[in-house]
Image 1 (cartoon, rainbow, N blue to C red):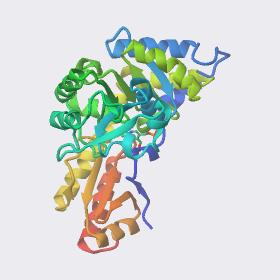
Image 2 (cartoon, rainbow, N blue to C red):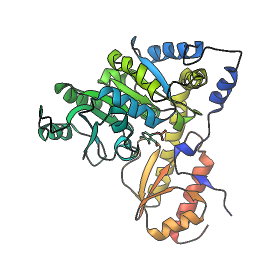
Image 3 (cartoon, rainbow, N blue to C red):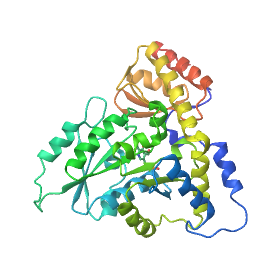
Image 4 (tube, rainbow, N blue to C red):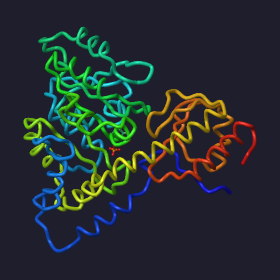
Length: 350
Ligand SMILES: Cc1ncc(COP(=O)(O)O)c(C=O)c1O
């Protein structure tokens, strides 16, 4: 029996040792609750410095869904529409959380290009289809970009800036679902500021859980008007943890000395190695993996043999699987996974 190899999701990975150690180190004495502690104040300062923005505000929350939906609810009126790619997690996999928290805002899915990226023409088409000022029709109020996309492709700072300009032309705010933003920044080699506010992003979800934290993601807000709302909205949604210091210290450790980017780069490298191995076997990808995720077209019989070989991955549809690496994926695991897939392709059980 082979040892299982985890390629289902980076959510299945464990925690980074640096983050676990930081939680232990914060367990000293008492500290005021609900974010009035030194760790949360330190995190605030750190985020302003790292993102080069004096008004940036960070709000720890316990999931990517909370980060996205609460931020979007603060950015979009109840009669508004959030424009996003039709495959976006916020539209397909968050159970309508944004509509619930916003009091009725809807998602409008855009088709995007062959790389699952929204283009300026998609946004323009949504504008053209809107009956502006007609109270029978939801009014576009936010453009949300998922970076990396749910298919493992990325928006460059230039592309984000171009889309933000189209959004601004109709006074839309710009949101970024950054559940894996560290993977995007590591792949692009840009600064955090370049991919966010300098490219016109008002608010983004800072994912940490898929990349080494134990129990925290965060919202980072560059718009004081949205931050003022989040102050109340987060409390009402139950996202102001009394022991916030243990969330804040995780985020501090995550961002300190580039740990988040090193972890993400490791996950990206593991995927690049896996993708090279799979290409060598002649397998076809839906998209070139820019970060740590790839969708692969494989015959059903091969999928079954892969499953029997102890590889853990998700089936996304007939003849389509998703493989995801994490900061914990080792070179040895990738070599072993490629060998098992080679055997499965050749028709052998391994
Ligand atoms: C792109 C994207 N956004 C948001 C989320 C939501 O994160 P969570 O599952 O922590 O709510 C996920 C989770 O997989 C995701 O892949």
